[in-house]
Length: 64
Image 1 (tube, rainbow, N blue to C red):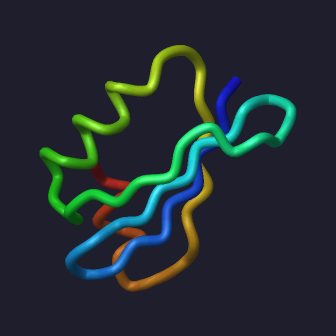
Image 2 (cartoon, rainbow, N blue to C red; image 1 turned 135 degrees about the vertical axis):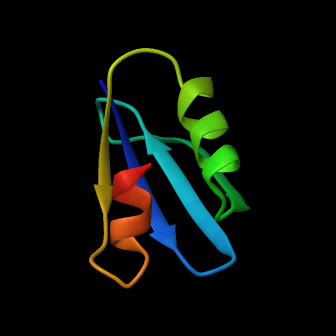
């Protein structure tokens, strides 16, 4: 399973993807837009778990 961490700001989201062993395998940033977030998540193959900090943008990202 891959573990994905989101750091969401109003315009950009920084994303880190970690392997099961905790090794960072990808770090990128995307626009904080529904289409970009969905496109990123669908590009990550296999089972995944997301960690999202509590923030004003958390509800928006969670609903997507």
